[in-house]
Every structure is written in C-alpha cells, then in structure tokens.
Length: 130
Length: 361
Image (cartoon, rainbow over all chains, first blue to last red; front, side):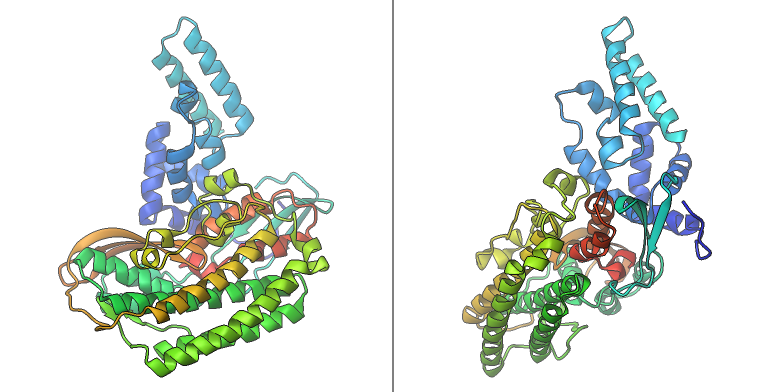
C-alpha cells in the first residue's frame, strides 16, 4: 500500500489489543489448536490483520467454535479448514483446500490417520508463517 | 495489506460523514473497491484500565462514559451484572422504569443513526427532520432522569427517580407526536426513489457472513439473524417483546430495521406506562465478591460486561465487548468488500451505525 506522510506504526496498538484479557485467552486457544507459540501467532496476526479484525478476534473465534466445520468431514474438522479461512482468516482458502485434499488422500493411503492430520497441521503452520 | 492495485484511497480520520475519527483505507480498481482496512486508535480512552481497582460506585459513572449515544445501556448492563454477582433483586416498578429509559435511549440512538445515514446520502431535509424529532425523545429522557445523555439512572437494586403521573401523561403525549412524525419520515424513506438508488442492493451482507463475524443488533437483524437479547430479558418477556427482522441485508434494510424498532420502542414504553406496577423503586442490597459475564441488548446490539469484584464491591477485572467491535469489522470486510462505487463506502459504513467510542473503549 502507498506510504502516506501521516502513516503510523500500528504494531504497538495492535499488540495492546491482542494482550487484553479476552483477546489473550483467544490467542492462546488458537495457538494451542495450531501447535504454535503464542508470540509467533501474535506476530502473524499483527502483520496480517487490521485493527478492527483484531478487536473482533475473540467473537470470531467463539463463532468459529460453534459454527465452523460440521461433523460431515472429520478431516476438515480436525484441520479447522473453515475455522482458519473464514472465521479466523489466517490461511488462504485455496492453500487450505489443497492441504485438506492432500491430507484426506493420505488418510486413505497407508499412513495412519493421526500421522496424516499431524502433517496437515504442520503444513498449515508453514502456510501461516510464510 | 499487500498492494495489489494502482489506487489506494484513505477516508478519514477526519471526514465530513464520520461522527468520530476513524480511517478506512480502500484498495480500488477503477470505481470498484476491492478491500478495505480499518485504522483505529484516534480516541482510545483506556476506560477498562481506569475502571480496574475502583469501587462500583465510581465504575458505574465510568461505564456510561464509554459511549455518549448509548450511555443508558452501559449503565444498565453494568448494574445488572453487579446485581447478578450480588444476588440483588429489583422491585417490579424499577424494572419497568428501566425499560422505559432504555427504550428512550434506543429511540434516540436509532434516530441519530438514521439521521447520519440520510445526511451521508445527501438527503439533508429528512436528516434534519429526524434530528429535530430526536430532541423530543431526549427531552423525555431528561424529564424522567434529569439528564439528556449521561443519566446514571440505574443503581443496584433499583432506579434513582420515580415517574410521576403528570410526567407519564406528558411523555405519552410526546410519544404520540414522535410516532406521527416518524411515520411520515419512514414513508419518505421507504418511497424515495433517490434514496432507493443509494440504498437498495448496496452493501449487502448475507446471513452466513453476518453469523461468521458475530454481527449483532439491527445490522444482523437486517440480514435475517435472530439475535435480540431482549427476547431473554425477564421484563421484556413480560411485556411480550418480539424481534424485528428483515432478510435483504442491504443498507436499506438496516435503516428500515431501525425505523421499525423506533415504533416498537414507542409501543413498549406505552405498555410499561399503562401497566406500571405500584411499589418502591429501590430495594436493598450489598455488592459482594464474584465473577460474571452479563450481556444486554444495546441499540447497536449485544453488549457484554465481564466483571470480577472483591468483597468490598471493587472491580478487580473488567472486559467490555461492545456491539460496534463486531459490526465495524463485518462492515469493513463483508459489506464494503467489492462494492461497485467508492461513493458507497461512506454510506455503507454509516448504515452499520459504527460507534468508534464504543470500539476503542
């Protein structure tokens, strides 16, 4: 985006939003689910999300827990396909779809299901940090 | 946000259509707005931090200073949260008086929101008519509470002032006047061809998107989401409250929901005055230690106070989730995304009734 003379560095304000009581709880829960460190996740969120999305993070996470990824596709549910693309948009939907399809294929092959899901989650982490 | 287009247009922080400072950065391709980014931080109050460690008697006044437009509901939700922690009962008369004040505040807020929208789409005549009618509503708020904005009307176990019979009669007469005027303005809005051009089919948010972003209040109800917390409130249930819903999800629907809710508020106040129970307006009670998360329906939607208190009634920890947090985010990332004209950004943003003071606490 074009740099304006009055463009401000928003990192400190974004960090303050993410470390308030409820947001901190949400960040910790998301990091736990993804198997990432809290600090790294915060860094990614500060870089990618605007301030209003960060403010709404807790609500989006709550709604994601209730409505994202129904039981019809267990692999998508374990990976959080809808959760991490539509509710908390950390991963590009096309990338997530590829990861989900490949994980689904792996669970059908010789690999054990747990191993396939673990690999899928590792690829999601890579996609988030890239 | 990565640069993907040739033109980035910043709107605000100081803009003629904004009531409060906020900056929206729009990435455009020609007239089409591809996406937007919201920049806050121009009026951060740090009010949650100020509240921590203070007794409830002080926090009560601070709570209604979160937002000047919907100050009554901040007062009400904080007080009802304290009552829940301390198991304090409210006399029936006080519960009804709370509804009257809350609905007057809702009317003032909805009329101001619709004024802002009409002003933004350059229908200044209707905007000024609405602002004039809002004065009558605020006069009635003053008649009952002694103040037009920060009323501090509710206290744990009741309310501060009773409604005298002569004031009730004057209020009913004023409400009839407001109802007649609002019926005329709603007709003007509903049938205006230029208003329809700027409002119908603009800034559409579907039901799924509204749920995903946890949109609340009239913004969500205009997209067909059932989400009015008054449906769960015991006094509103006694009064037979039903929710207003529309399904179009566009700017027009959001404004019309607010118009319809103004009439609903008038009916609720009338019902309260007609069936106002006799008895005291204050009960007893002592604020105690405890923890709760309590939500109420503000004019803009669900308002949640998560409070932890100690044995002296001091607020140890508090987190306030205001409706604008959800609505502004949904507006910036769903309603405004892919609008066909940059001119629709301001009107769509205002149609979601954004409150930056609430958002930044």
